[in-house]
Length: 391
Ligand code: TTP
Ligand code: MG
Image 1 (cartoon, rainbow, N blue to C red):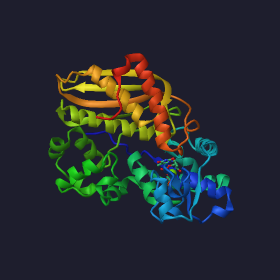
Image 2: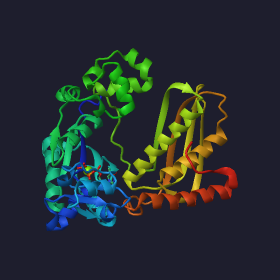
Image 3: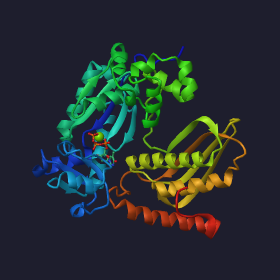
Image 4: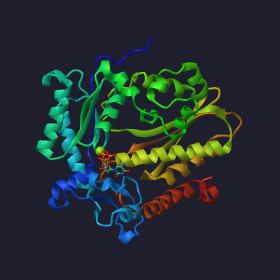
């Protein structure tokens, strides 16, 4: 019998259209208008991306990470701003300071998002719902910004609840209602179900979280391995992840366990590429950069090796993480034994948020960083040690 998180009360909070909302707050002219924060659109020729946009701009289909040229095409009359990371970080600090008044059981997830475990503190406000309301009200009153809040016995359900309640929402999912709440939702709402897993599950006639919850565990294990069992737990409201007080995020990592152990070079390289992308994306979401890149290889026989390389410059760029990881992989692995798991971690992180300009032309930034890192690797391992191109 698995331990349950019964009687726990977790809040997930995420600010609405964070950067754009701050700009609308600080400039009356922007209120109620489509506002896009990101790279300069340069009359449609800009090459950067959208960081975020106001809900008014979302009506035009604009969203985070969209090329700025596309956003410009969709709504030329939108207000395009290049943003002010220092200001956003300052507001973020104010929000976290305010949240710490409610509990120190707080896990920051990104610049505008956190989990709070209020199990031991909600009674100060009589109920979990009133605690959520008090948090929202204080943020509104003191910072003039809207937050969306989800409350549930487990982290995953709290996050889904806050997402579904956006914008300016407050939703509580009680223990007794949790399965009904989860089971109505499509499968891709679950943490860890991306497009590939969704297709796999759909092939098993699993479309809703309920379908997955009621599926035979053995079939899931056969098709998806440990991931299948983990997803089955989540679908049944079992999520043992606790709120971790990680005021300082120490590292960002992703791992992939292969459905079947493999020594297929193409597949292994593809996996390193996709892990590098995920780590890079997450670092960027947190506004972090790291100096040390760690590659983890677990073989069929469960032998695990890790290799690390520390760069002179901190990075969060895909090309750098990928190049360094591939180099370590090639040096370390001889294809003799099949691989069960690959993981990539970036650690040795620097100041969050402020140092990275999220809005630069990503091509130029990438080029600059890639060159710096490539030079570094070449200095260390010789001229032929690294070549451009992924595979
Ligand atoms: P999010 O919380 O993902 O987005 P949001 O707050 O703008 O909108 P939502 O109401 O949907 O929560 O991210 C928080 C901030 O992080 C966002 O305002 C801008 C920044 N960000 C980027 O710079 N690039 C990105 O790709 C994403 C997703 C966010
Ligand atoms: Mg947000």
